[in-house]
Image 1 (tube, rainbow over the protein chains, first blue to last red):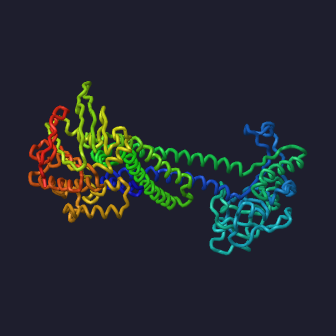
Image 2 (tube, each protein chain N blue to C red):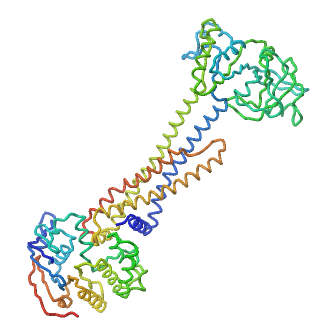
Amino acid sequence: MKLADILQFASGSLRGSPTRTLLMMLAMSIGVAAVVVLTALGEGARRYVVDQFSSLGTNLVIVLPGRTETAGIGPGLMSGQTPRDITLEDAQALLRSRAIKRIAPLTIGSASLSRGALNREVVVLGSTSDLLEVRHMSIGIGKFLPAGDIHESASVCVLGNQMKQELFGNEQAVGQWVRLGDRRFRVIGVLASQGESMGMRTDELVIVPVASSHQLFNTTGLFRVLIEAKNRDFIEQTKHDAEEIMSQRHSGEKDVTVITQDAVLATFDRILTALTMAVGGIAAISLAVAGVLIMNVMLIAVAQRVKEIGLLKALGAPGKQIRYLFFAEAALLSGIGSVAGLLLGYTGSFVIGKVYPMLPVSPPWWAVLAATLTALGTGVLFSVWPARRAAKLDPVAALAGK
Amino acid sequence: MIELQNVCRTFTVGDQQVAALRDINLRLDAGEYISIMGPSGSGKSTMLNMLGLLDRPSSGTYLLDGGNVSDLNDEQQARVRREKIGFVFQSFHLVPRLTAAQNVELPMILAGIPGEERKARVNVLMQNYGLSDRADHKPDQLSGGQRQRVAIARATVMNPTVLLADEPTGNLDRNTGWEVLKLLEGLLQQGITLVVVTHDGEIGARAQRQIHMLDGRVVSDESTQNDPK
């Protein structure tokens, strides 16, 4: 018997009982669609988190003052000491490392920002021109902080998009003067609207040169030093160099903490991938259920078609051929079922993507492959028993319908 | 060409052994017209199933064209059935979802014969049996006589050497029954061996060789000079 004939005969018997066939395909396709949609959601969540981290800046290494112990509270805090500040010179010294591409020192404080009668309390970031690159921010109108001497306290500032709106409305802001604390600053640029970026709303910020912020808040220390490594491979070395340089400058004391974004990112990535696989696995159980359903219905089909099986045997079909016919039926069922399921799943993912535009929903290729293979596998596997049963029927009894 | 040697067939019913065939010795020659008669339970259907390789003897030997076929495995026996044996049943046994033409085509599909040849052979047979205008009808759209003619076309499409008919007229009215019987007897001219199982003496009497069975034994085996044509 030719393969094409086997398939044709099997599809003929599937068409012979359309309700049964449709129901089984529905079960199969819902199983496949569940795997596709759930893994697409998981993958979307994973990508969302990874993207959020990347928007912080790539290849980012952060230096912060104080030593974070695993216990949570360092010995310095217990004894009432504050950790030694990181100074601008410390930050500049980091550039000695070959692994480091650029740095951006960062101070943070809050001050009142006013223009005429309008007054607002704002978060003030002090930094340098490199912050724009390191943090992947983009400028909307005007210019960012000028490059030049890190110690020069120019009276210029860059406003977040929302700050500009609140103080200037639709008026031109660049070139105007605002008052920040007890000093006047000239607005030289407005940031492009970026929304939230890992806990900090750039739209509500005011950015000034780091030296100006030191004067404004009367400090010398830095809140953070953001380091951008030359590339991904240099991240470990950057971390090592940063610790080395800081400890040299702090008379051998390891009183700074260096964290890499990569470590955090990798952890999130692992957690969310595991979660996606777990959810996909749970959905795959529904495929196994569909498989059992196929077995059930195939057994009924064997019982219903006993006479036909007997006839096929009388016409000269060996048991093997009858087994193939039932396999072919199961394979067709689960094959068409999984194609329908994939369509359903992709449509579902597309709709979810439209409903939650933030989430980059897309079914991962491995889940699509696994769902299809599981569907085909369970379909054929669960038809082994019914097919064997059909093949083993005694032709005389089968013809008599017994 | 068909020879049964000391063939016995026993069934186990409950804890009792029931003998359906007891020590049958029979030789059928090519081209013979044989009727097997007897009351129900006499073993005539079991005999037919045995001849058609649907049943295996509990003991004894079945020789077909000189070869022992009782020792063949499932696949080899299926091949013999496919190539040498045709079945006609009392209840027709047509596949309900297939058309008349598709039912006739079925044995050739199982044999792996290419599509064009199948179509050609089906067309010839449908024409011979006056079924051309019924080719695309499903069995439930056919009369009893037409169904049995489709079944005979199916049984002969592989050009078998033996045609086994189990009460071929049993589900038909008298006139249609005679027509079907004439059709079967016409096959004798092509050199086919025709075995008809029946409990109807009038039909059985048409065969040149009449075998009577009782309690699993052949009680009489007579050849007459009947000419059915």
